[in-house]
Amino acid sequence: MLPTEAGSRGTSGTHQETLLFDVDRAKHDGCAQRLEAFAEQHRERLEELLRAYGPGSAPAAHGRYMLVGQPESLIICEQMETAPFLLRSRWKRELEDVLLNDLEFAWGPRTRLGR
Image 1 (cartoon, rainbow, N blue to C red):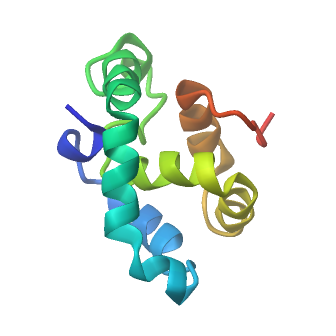
Image 2: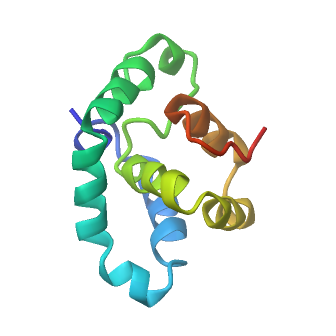
C-alpha cells in the first residue's frame, strides 16, 4: 500500500496547499503524470516507508513521522528526490521543520537538508 492509499487525512490540507500552490505553473501541469511515474519507480521503497514508519508502526505510536501515510507524503518524497532545496525553502516559510525532518529521515534521500 502506498502512502497515498492509507492513513488519516487530518493533516493533509495545509501541506498540500504549501506543496502544490507554490509550484510554478509549467511544473504543476505535469504533476499527476510525474507522481504516477515516481510512485511506480519507487513502489517498493514507498511500501517499506509505510510499513516501517506509517500508522500502526512503533515510531508512529510515539507521535513521530505523522506525514507518513498522508496523501501528501508522495508529493513530498518526489520533491525530496527531484528538488530538495526548493522543497526545503518553501517548507521553512510555512510549516514545522520536524515534520519534514522526520519524513526526510525515513525516506533517506540523497541530500539531507534538515540536519
